[in-house]
Length: 430
Image (cartoon, rainbow, N blue to C red):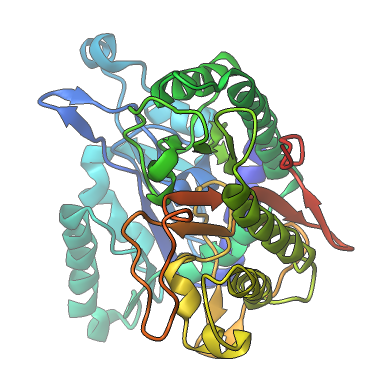
């Protein structure tokens, strides 16, 4: 894996020319008082280094004659390691992670100038760490103050995100292997959840079994699991998971495993009891058809907009057929009347982040095209909230439809000739 991290750094260096890229590790987060959450590294930092400790800085300096990859890390400290875990340390940063040079993080201010002095710009993302943002600005301003004497040094700060977005969008064979493993675990969890769902059980029981499978297989939840029965399925990011499930309700499960930092993201909706009600089945069939047609649009050369537009048209047409919307389909879409029932996009990139890095569009008119190696979710839905109000000149919503929430989501790999539904192991038809 270290060879792949090195290749990524070399690719980045080829794109930044004489620039110097600086990446800050993710901060630690406190759950309450002095108890920390499990640490999760910043995705760009991890993508380029594989280094998984806090309080670190990576510097990539292609113009430096010797040190093109530099790590600033926490030094070994036996007393602190007893409390909070072993550290790689300065020597380990070189031996285990391939750094050309490594320093204690306390030496950043002293050592950083030598890597900036020959660069023409600093590539750095102004993130949430305001103190570190100010550190970078301080070094940049100091360099600017002497630029007229030396004629060298960075004269601009540029966000590296457009570069790293493009790199991360196309998955390598190694990345796809990790995504497939995350999917495999998630498929097992979803299929078990379907088996054990029954009236009288609680949402949190299903959540517990899902996340039990994740951890048994060496993974963790990729995001807070959504286990939403009845009206709760109309809350897009419902996470309380504390209601008792009833017969004739639906259960919407949106849960995915993270394995080796790579993620799966699956949603299924099915009856808590034995069968759909007629109204539930009618809505389900529309969502399923929207998803199948949208997936068919995920292929090289098609744009990100096409698969969303396809889902919107199927959903809008279906809502008209059921009498939940009234009017000419294209006009309803133009006026976004469907958004009362379907208010989110049809999918997002998937990878090292659940909502992974990558551009969706370039300005108002130009959309990203699908390319082999991209992984995307396809997740249309219809949500008829209990308190939904009909839009102007639209029919009133009969009570028999209220409280139905349905989403179906798969993870789809763009291939040379079309696509592969990675999550096909979880059935969609009851």
